[in-house]
Length: 491
Image 1: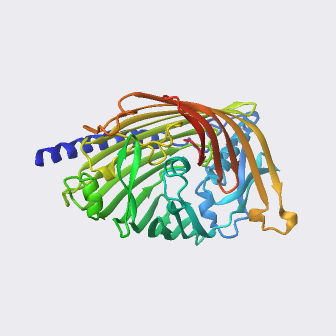
Image 2: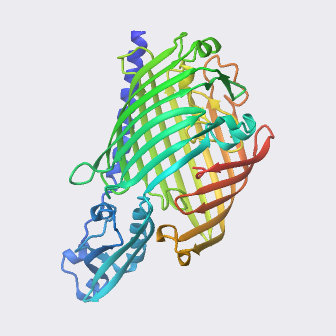
């Protein structure tokens, strides 16, 4: 046991060094060049100088609640900066996208005003969103809509209801406070708080989370890649979680997160009898500390539904630090998505993700694989394909076929809800994957240890406040097909 644990920790340490090396390359290999063009610094001729604008002032307009420094943190442009005239429109569009991706505003426009003598003022106009959402909660307990509709036979008892109070842009500093009181299938109380910046240069931030949940119905096993559930009149699963995350944002596009988390779970005799390996070794209680690191390099044009740009993520997670003997699992994860604007309203996207966890023998409640955490192969939404290692490739091509914006401001509606954009895309997709099975996991072999693919056609609907709906008709390797509905972009 001691030797195994040392091997796990040595592997985690080596993997961490590799991940940190890659992330340092992505993070610090993109430093901006000098604001002043080299030929200006060297005393260029007047006709060369005429190819540049000098920013006199950058004005922020429309931010009634948001602190100005929160917006300026997203901007590369600043007072006294030289801009190459032929590239100014492209640069200002990139600046606009960065402000849009804060998700603080429903409208962002960046324009410039010529003052003469090569000087300009830049005006950043924003229209703030509605930030306080006391929303009645009504959602499904299942992994996705198709799981509920097909595998759970549209069982209304699996609904979760309650109230979620979310205060975005708390104190005007892009902080977020979340309060959740949830009932129904899962009873849950949760408090979350996100502070994007805690230091003067706005690079360090903090996140906190506390949650407590109980269930009278939970999945205890997977058979033929479908979750099996147990019901009880009393609580059969109880969970508590708390974590703290330190974030570091060295530049506009890169983020590092260092987290520590405590998890405690317990089950009653029913779950332990149905699956003695739920927590491994017939245990009815599990607790562990974990530490993790995640790096993100995000250059997407629109986070909720990207059409151009790229996203790279890599993480390492160590569950079990030797304080408790319940868990000792190391997980490596990496993903890369690339998106292209092909012109004439055509777009393409390609994403690849991979996960590897060690050792292979793990408690059932911590099993990983496709079907969890937004890693899906389209055409297999009703299944979970579990395994300690997998690779997934998603491919899409789409065409914008309809786009409009409805103006409701003449109906005396708040400007925050006065314009409703609507875009519709026709999509074609092809996904492929491979999942290595857990050892001796004979209940689930149909889609494990074999090449998988899925394909189909769909319609994506994108509207305001980051609303994305996908209607897709898909086929899989087993010649199964069906209409699927999802909320959020595919990858």
